[in-house]
Length: 330
Image (cartoon, rainbow, N blue to C red):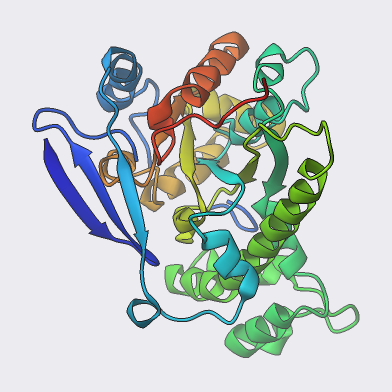
């Protein structure tokens, strides 16, 4: 065994890997090259076998950094959410465009009828937060982010009559200039994170109130799902207790984009290829080896297989950073 140590934004991570195998443990407002996704890569294809054959638990231990080792935060909610002793678990779900990440979240949160799998979770899933929807809130008139966008890109990026962002005009700028897109992301993502942390904190408070009542599933460890296409790019993995990436073969993704979003084949291919520089897509194996991604879910378009992959992931201790499956209702 090899002891690995990595420095995260707010913690030191110690984990183990074998000498012969890598450790498997540990867009949104604007859509962001994978020519070899017609079938899962050998790496992804081998993961199910790897998970099923393993019998040894590989632990990952996180030690929060002291105040003098990380920037202090004035946001109490952020400190609470990052607290290793919080009373909920956060499952991050991300993936490429049209990979099926939203469908995965619906299956997990039991918002799909006749979904037998979610019923076996014993009430663990207590909330589903879509970070893409939070990003749209950031762009609403009156939000401070709009003034920051105007300061960076010019006031003509705002519609004078309504105060809204001129998405067409802003999009034409950022899509054609990677540095402009980066500048936009640096403005927007911190605001989305603040909203995300506040939403998690509010959910935890609500869950604590519910569980303080007799007979309200006090033995259950609540899990909140955070769905975010840019979860890795934005560096929000520090918020999660597990991070699953949903991956789909390119030909299936292409078909979905053309059918569901009425895109031409050329446009759909451009959107798929543009993602290749994104974290967790172009460098998925690296993110798994580094302990950031805790599970890869392959979605080949078969619903039963997809549900089974999610179920296997849920009940595999190694899909969770602390090496244990959330306790369920007895």
